[in-house]
Amino acid sequence: MRARMADIAKQAQVSEATVSRVINDRPGVSAETRQAVLTALDVLGYERPERLRKRSAGLVGLVVPELDNPIFPAFCQVIESTLAQQGYTPVLCSQSPGGVTEDEYVEMLLDRQVSGIVFVSGLSADTTADHARYQRLLDRPLPIVLVNGFAEGIEAPFVSCDDRQAGDLAVSHLVALGHQRIGMISGPNRFISTQRKLDGYRIAMKRELGISDPDFVSLTLFGVEGGEVAADRLLAKGVTGIVCGSDLMALGATRAARRRGLRVPADVSVIGFDDSPLIAFTDPPLTTLRQPVTAMAVAAVNSLVDEINGHGAPHSEYLFRPELVVRSSTAIAPARRKVPAATPAA
Image (cartoon, rainbow, N blue to C red; front, side, top):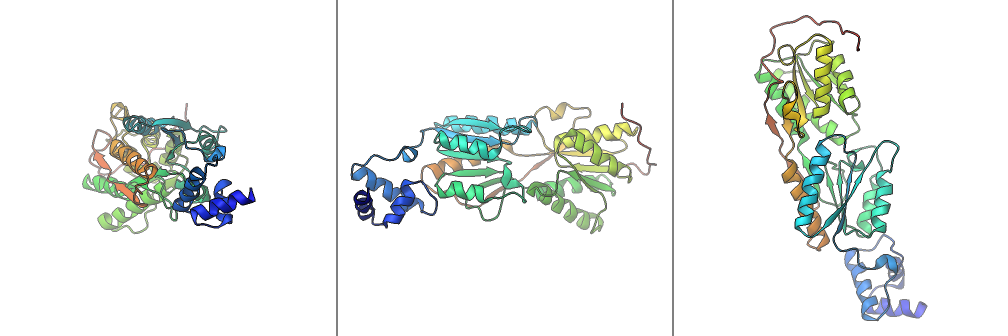
């Protein structure tokens, strides 16, 4: 084996230590050097180790945090169809509480020798998570693309909706309707999407109303129930408009308002985020910030395919502008109102 290592190193013009790292599939070797060693193996007639054989042509991992929120199936549908058009088959990995984790799914995908992985709102979106897991994939090297999960230091393409712009647009819309007591509810502050929406909200509150430190922010768990709890806190402070971090949270905010005997939008206006499927058919139809799902998904797939084909997509963040979709959950602000006490939930 020692003689063979020396032959391979000579053919590839690298050290034997580098050959060893490549053969054992260890990080710390550039993609060009790794390919040179693999080519040397082929030229000299040596069989590649099982783990280094050509990845399964056409398989691409698609990792999403859940499928309960309709925005994630929307992303999956477009990503899957776009991959199919380019000759790739997605392997969908969706998580559930207490189920298979993102890291465990990644190990499964590596065992299947996928050509690349698309992460939608993965652990990269959590600023407290260890992002070294993504660097280890890049060091293999394995092409990855991260959707709505920007993190500093990861040399990969990112595709994101401009959350700062979303927070700004929502506040500007409510101010134009005469609202001044405008609240913001979203998920935990450790998520980059929450941080950015809050930045946009605060920037617009300062610019439009001269309020530099608004006392109308309530952070909670994502989902309808979290939105209801957070909105109830803000309604107790007399807000007349609520900007929400997701459409599901906006549905919770509407429920909280009705539990207090308030009408949406006559007494309180509510704005969501995502424009997920069927949200236009709620009661009332929800004003929301639409994520450009199709454009984002196509950009993510194109970037991944470029990476797979060795064309090197730019390792930067592509920001897509959200669109304000005005429906019936926002209206001119009430002149004044008393704050009704909450009634017990049924």
